[in-house]
Structures are given as structure tokens and as C-alpha cells.
Amino acid sequence: MSLLQLYKNAYSGLARNNWYLSIVMFINRSGTMVVPYMILYCINQLHFSVAQAGYVLALFGAGAILGNYVGGWLSDHTGFYDMQVGTLLLGGTMFIVLGYQHTFISMCIGAFVLSFCNEAFRPANSSAIAYYSAPQNKTRSYSLHRLATNLGWAFGAAFGGFIASINYKLLFWVDGCTNIFAALMLLWLIPRSTYIKPVKNIVETVKSISAYRDKPYLAFIALVTLFNVCFYQFFIMEPVFLETEWKFSLRFIGFLLALNGMVIALVELIMINYLEGRRPALIYIIYGVLITGTGFALLNLLLPRPVAGILVVLIVTFGEMMSMPFMNSFWTTRAGQHNSGQYAGLYAMSWSAAQVIAPVVGGQVIAAGGFKLLWYVLFALSILVAVGLWLLHKKLHKNI
Image (tube, rainbow, N blue to C red; front, top):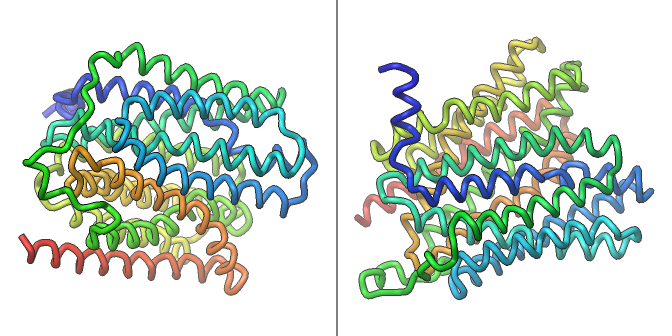
């Protein structure tokens, strides 16, 4: 089969509305410029201390957790369409408002409210993808969504550096305007008149349990959160390690981070198209978790050479592609249309919680035993998560 045919097969059969949602997500994430430069903005422009900048980011994370919870609940009660439009508009407005805050207190409040509005969008968006997907291609639909997110993030972070060098305040305007433009694009591409709010029906009574009382799913969320704390070190502590310990240039480190997004864009959908439906989602997640953990362990075993850095990035990226699309497909199989917002909200909350916890955990482990201890701890935690997921798989399979 030709390479062109592989791509054609991977991208075919996906619902038109999911393509539209991916376009909206790409626009939204292309404006992701404030968050990567928030700590630099607080220190360099507002002259906050490092500790004060840390508090601002911590409140941003807290707002994200609460936003995902409330966003999931509201999505189930008001419908995912209105939630997406409303949160994009509110989030866009708050980005612009935050750019005009100059005191520590106002920045803390603004960061919390902004993150709350911005992250409340995620559960509604995830529910929308599940709603528009056919059962046989839900995982590919989420992979398409991840592709749009990664491409948008890469573009936004790179372009944001250029804008920040001109004027930090422009970051807030660009980020806000792209949010608002994404909302307008959603209204245009998928008119509200075509949307029918999902309702609870008799067929779905088997899935009527609340996500917060679904014990297997809560165990899954706890394990995923632990894995996410490990995975975030790839973006938080690994670049620091590559610069300080392996003496890589910032330019080469930037290339390695960009390589992650490029591989995902080129490979993930083809891989998911081949794997989807062949084995249970939890099995692929277990493989991905173990592969990612192995990538971290190799940082202690390989010599500090550019080829070693590339190899580690490729291994961690492959683990990411193997695990994360199937994490989405797992929660969609647990949820019904009337409570998908709860399930999506809990899943998104696990990412937000890990984003808050990961820097603290990474910093404390490095302080206790250096980077070498960190990479072995991440490897051990990955094995622990894999074992937990295997036990969960056995329990669910036994109950079938």
C-alpha cells in the first residue's frame, strides 16, 4: 500500500462536523501565547517576584480544575454547543481583560477567572467530538482533534515568542481574539439550528450512573493523573535537564520539542487507524505508559549526544501516541450522551491537576536526588500505573 493511500485511509470516514471542530480547535490553540510566557511576563513586565509569579500560575491551575468540573456539569445540563460558544467568548474577553491587570491581587483573580472560563470549554468540546463520531472511529476522531491541538500549540508558542519580543500586551490581544474568532467559526461552520441536544433515553439507562460514582472510572482517572504527572516532566523538567546536564543549545532543545509535534502530526492517525478496534483500549494505554516510562529511564543510560536526545523524544512521543488517544476512547465507552460532560470533565480535570502537581513533584525529587533520581522515579511510577491499569482491565473483563 502506498504512503498516500495510508494517509487517505487514516483520514477518511470521519464526520464532517469533527473536521469543523478540529478547525475551531486549531484556531483556538494557535492563539495559545499567554500561558507559555505568563511567568516571564509577571517577572519581567510586572516586576513580581518568582514566588509571586508561581502563585499566579498556581491559581491558573486551580481555575482550570474547577472550570473542567463545572464545565462538564453544565455541558450535560445546557448542551455542549452553547457551552463551547459561551466559554470561547468569555475566555477571549478575559484574555484581553487580564492584559490590563498590573497588581499582584488583580493578576491572581484574573488568572483564576480566565482559566476557569477557558478550561470549561474542554469537557463540552470532548462531548461534541464523541457525539459526532461513529462508534468505529471515535479514537481516530480524537486523534484528529489532538493533531489540531498540537499544530495550533506549536504555531502559537513559536509565534508568541516573536510577539513577546515586540510587546507582551499584544499576546493577550492575540490570544483573546483567536478565542473569539474560534467561537464565530463554530457558529458559522456548525450552525446552532443543526444541533439537537442529547437527551436521556431508555436505552442509556445502563450508563445512567454518575461519573463521580463510577468506581472503575475513578480508578482510571487516578491512574491517568499519576501518569500525567510523569508525562508533564517531558515538557517541564526534561528541557532543563537537556540544557544543564547534557549541555544542549536552546535551539536544539526547541527542535526536539517541535519534533514531538511533527511526529504526532505525521504518524498518529495512521497508527490509530491500524490499531483501533483490534484490542481493548486499556491494553494500548498500558503499552503506551510503559514505553513512555522507558524513554525517561534512558535519560540515565544514554550518553549525552544529540542522537540520544532525538531517540528519547521519539520513544516518549510513541508512548504518547499509543496511550492518549485510547484514553479518550475509554471514557467515551463508559459515558452515555446525557452524562458525557461529567466523564469528559473528570478526564480534563486529571490533566489540570497533573499540570499543577508535576512541577512541584519534579522540583522536590530533583532537590532530593538530582535528575538521575527523577528519571528512575518516573520509570517506577510508569510501571506502577501500568500494573494498576492491567488490574483494572482484568476486573472489567471479568465483569463482562
